[in-house]
Length: 106
Image (cartoon, rainbow, N blue to C red):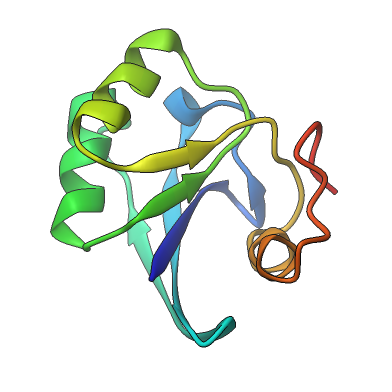
């Protein structure tokens, strides 16, 4: 499984439309095995979905997301969880161990 986190510097981006980079975490047996970082020159929903599909990402964790972006991701078959804040690796690890508050991050 691959989980992406929309980032601005070292935190989850305030909005998916403000994503400067993606941190992509390869997960195996509930543990992060590898992390790859990608720059997002074009944070439009279509470009972001294409980048996620190219990297074979299954899910993205983000903060705010527009209805249009949600629709584009859903149509591309990419799950998303919004309302997340914090450091990317921390939110992924908390998601994996079931302690990520899904109503405002950590």
